[in-house]
Length: 544
Ligand code: NOJ
Image (cartoon, rainbow, N blue to C red; front, side):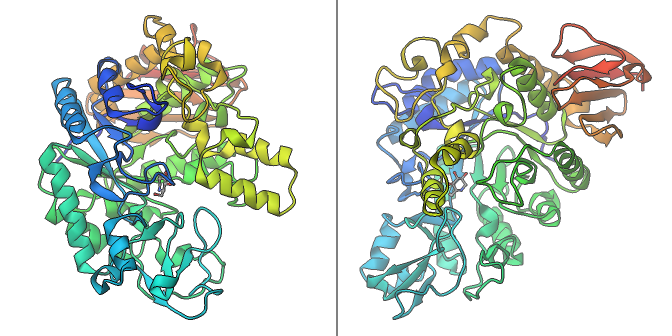
């Protein structure tokens, strides 16, 4: 059995990590420069979001060649060097496999446009003379219809994301063979893991039927055939590699499917990302409306996913990534409790069952940048949403307020290395603005401060790796009021309890009921045995 609980994965968004050649964009050499920093933090794997050739309409998730490096990031030699240098530090590299769709600038799509029947069969193309009404009413995840008319096809092609991201026809075995070749190419290079982008939406039947909800998700999400495809690619590529780690990003998924995706006996993937706990601030499922987060629902979701996957599947545990606003700005309170809320959420992910994933900048408590104008935004989804809300007649001030809370750009601002120009990310103006708080929040000011967020993360990582109860133990939740999440982690000879206050209010609680032997984590200086302070995180070793 693979040991997954003591691996810590660091998600790195290369365009915003470190710019080595001062062109305003982060690059591979920049990552290499910072490997010592990542080693100091204590992580095991770096998941790098796509650095493959791409026109970058969706920041690299629109890949035009899976086996070529985009020159804006560097060269294949740089990648070889990165793999080698990372290996010297016991760090593996995980690449992002974006296989639901491919860029319309890829050779495959270009050949399809030139009329090749072989390559037209790589895509979902529906011939039609009707250039106004798409084959069905499914909508794109980035707004508008999930279809684009293409004169050269004399028909429509399916694109669930941007119009330049054409959905690949997994139904065609040749497509699956091509993708296996891509994986083998990277495995041979020494890549140690794959993160599969929106992998649970690959199972389209080829029949396009109008959806009653005018959205269409149920027709293409978690279709039974996805399990067959995953078993097939597992067997044909990464399945038998001992120390290889795979994680699937699952969009609007179910627990039942995630058990299958991540149960080792099924031979599909090692673990799953689900996003339900990051939608508790959506109003009736609508992202582009602000609503205070629902703590009770958050707690219920964490608890349910932990318990249902226990012994049956495996969670990738995370609260931040490149598509999500920063958790401390979002569910925490960065004005009043910046340190406390940043470290509270860290303690949650490092003490739950699963594999913890942290996202660049999280380890120093980076926050949302609070952009004020639309030209500060770069993200295609955010810009489309802005235009759609404007077209509906919404007030621009309100739209900008929503974006400043919900936009994906909130997590994509440059890494804050120091308090100098452009936060030390680049000598020139970066592709996206740096958050204004970089003078207070940056790596340099935290690295040697034992009480910093950075060193809190280091301690948590060390604690996790040293305690079997944390990386392998059972989890059991203890009833409490909505603002507290309390759970025990247990192995045969040790028991720990996490007591986490997810609110900005002090909550009465009898800590003494646990006969504790040691305080392993406390993000306050003191411990009050009768109450838990705002965003306080306690981890205690207790008598078993
Ligand atoms: C999920 C990725 O995380 C996101 O950034 C991207 O836009 C979509 N998949 C489409 O590839």
